[in-house]
Length: 473
Image (cartoon, rainbow, N blue to C red; front, side):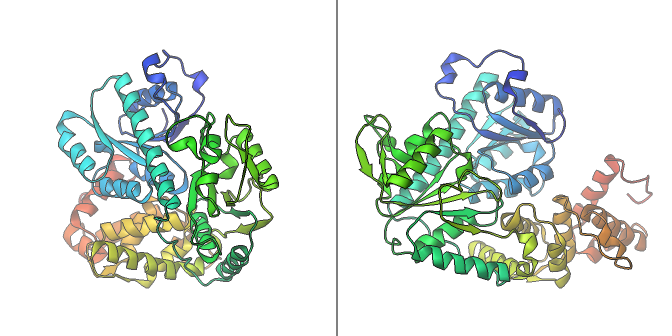
């Protein structure tokens, strides 16, 4: 199976069906699989596809980070050997920042201690290799159910008024000033709102700010993800007559006169979307299985991608969030904001950022927008040797891992600006190494990186055939 393979065509994959005893426990989910062993990765991916999961498989931790920054996943299934160095901390931190993402680690007997340490640091569970296919399918089902329960708990926290205050929008570009003006107008109104934007642009934060500035701020705010299948989303939204437990009352009733935020409304089932449009029009709805009309008093705020059409009929007010690449002047302020948050959380001193580091950030394309920028800053802080400063070389290395491209400059500009950042990093390191005649300690000191980090990079490039045989490598 090729790196980064996305497997979705279930009917094209031969093999036995999932045992009936597992079928009732299984709900499909989107899984990101990280394992260096191509044969085992292929086997695991096909097993999960037979269980009707949507699987993206890769053997490269850097590629996994890139997918996490730009795409939505329910489960990260990772082999501990494939997450060397600082990668385990970063992967677990990703899981902690995103409650909808559950992390499960796989470990052979020799790496079992590392797997258990990952569980202690926040992973949902660790499964020891080798394992039976049924065992893996069952664990994945449990982990996905755990993720859904976490989202439901968050929804209940919203319903009870226990949700965290919305994060403020950072940046003073013309695009962000326009967004703030739109938020004020939407907060003063009472109709549905549609928030458009790419993944990672802050759609949830905008929904929270509208709620906080409106006359419904003292009422609950519930967030419902519209990716539910097999009628689940419809039940979560409208409730279900005659059932016991959480889904008896849906979000529309739980919110009362508050706000219901519908994330990814373009992913909603057509039947649920039709019912939602009818409820907005009539300001009334029926629970599933009931004929009784109930008044719909909650205000709806929906989010979707920049080009999706599913939400157009839902809202009269639309807010479009600009991608980060269109407001690069906000990046310095965003970086300072993130570093302050990291310092408050970790207790470490706030870092000074080299001007050149910010210049590298402003040249990157940012397909994952503000969310990806946060991930890059956090990884750079983890990798930085000096606690007081964030160096350009460290930032360049992290961006190189993200495989971003520096935009081309006009003729006569810096020739390095026309190269991929990973290639720029390699050239800088090799030029510095040649300057010191292969002395690794002096090279690492001059670059501001650890000598072990330098050795790892040289070994990786040599194994990948990117280096000729060097007497000092």
